[in-house]
Amino acid sequence: MTPIVVFDLGKVLVDFDYSIAARKVAARSSKSLENLSHFLSSSPVLVQLETGLITPQQFFYEIKKATGFSGSMEEFHDYFADIFIPIEPMVKLHAELRKKKIPTYIFSNTNDIAVAHIRHNFPFFSQFDGYILSYQIGAMKPNTKIYEALETMAGRRGADIFYIDDRAENIEGGVARGWQTVLHEEPDKTRAAMEKYLSARI
Figure (cartoon, rainbow, N blue to C red):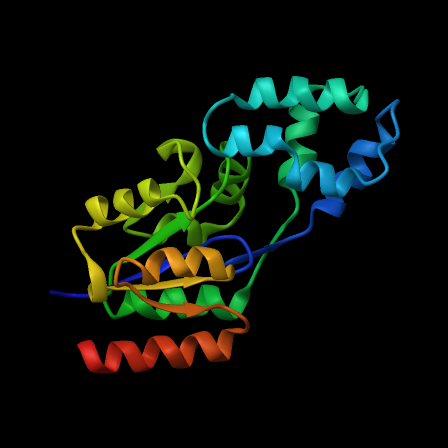
């Protein structure tokens, strides 16, 4: 069976910096939070958004309540989402896999605000065979439910899956299921590990 390659999104295919959004939101807010960047990236409300428990509109109202943000919901969503930059060596690596007809998947803890922005601005995002996104599944890595969803969608198990992620706890979730993995630290290391895996499989 043809193996698949599974990519995390943030810090693997796109870099991001919540301080960019924090500066814009703070400039339109009446309340001063000590570390707005940390709040935006680590708030329990973000976890609720990324597990599909609240809508983007509800997320906006919670942030507005906490910060006194005076702008519109559309402005906030633009600020919140416009924090991404493609990691070009990894985008290139994915394009090479597509040319070789190797199936690829996105497997990400994320939210629909970010995904809408990335889909609109980065053409590479449309070039995957499937997408397992936490807010649609109702679970975040390393919860077993989201790994099972990827296996079901892809029709692959164990060593037929090569998984790239920058977080050790997420990688451990894949290792526990027999997936082949690499902890992403820099593109050359990830490329070497993936090529070694594929050379033994194809």
